[in-house]
Length: 326
Image (cartoon, rainbow, N blue to C red; front, side, top):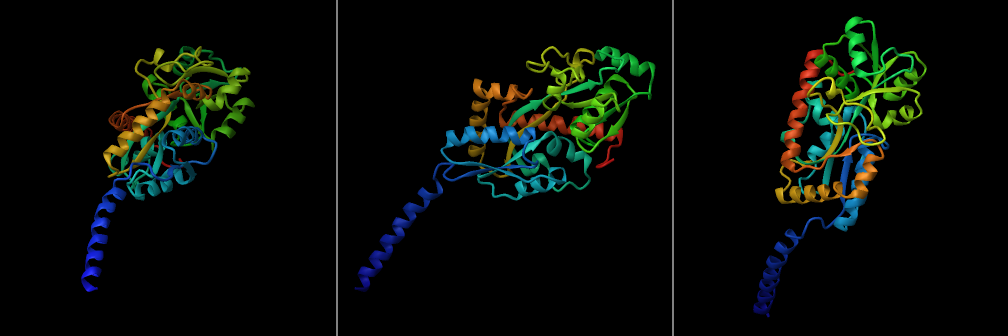
């Protein structure tokens, strides 16, 4: 009897040894995946995260859940993503703010984008646009540059707030073009646009997505977009800043990253699947409808892009002395 029990135990142990590797090697994903978004619902990063979640749910045959953790300039959510288990089941939506600007804007930032995370792929770029009240004397970017140089310090522009992509993109334009235009920060682009439409302020930098309806209805006039190339239709008639200031290129963006030490093969698979979706005509159309452009890339390409963004916005933050909330 004792011998039989030993034999059964040995057999069970052998079966366990065979089953354990099979469980460990189960193909990814074999359960739901979570996208952590460091912004409230409705912003561009959230909208396109949900689009990717919808498409990848079909591809992976596992539910992709979007979880919003807004506030704190995206820092608490990014800390959460940093601390997640590096198994590919918790992924971070990262942006020009959280990964491009924050590393210089905030002292003692509790994460390092290229150390604590494994970049996967960028998802989209959103051009920003310089818009003006209809009675503003400049009708083109060239006229704005000439006017600002003729009357330094006389004119001002609104932004969504200090340290935002709208603010820093306009400051980058000022640095490159050698202009003196005062900054009037608002608490969000909505209040700033309200004052622009009311004529209380005459100039503003905003996202193309937010300004699109006002441009279409000619309640504001668009002077230039910030990306190196022109924005997609219906804004393709608006020139790029780079046409007057060679080499200028700035945009809001959002992509996908995983906690550091996520297995490279999982990162590579996610990246390939995301890139495939971003090259699908149906997805491209949905992104273009919001005046944005898809930006698929390999993990290394996205890593290099993030490094350039940190350098670019670091230069602007230091040159302007920008501090959080100032």
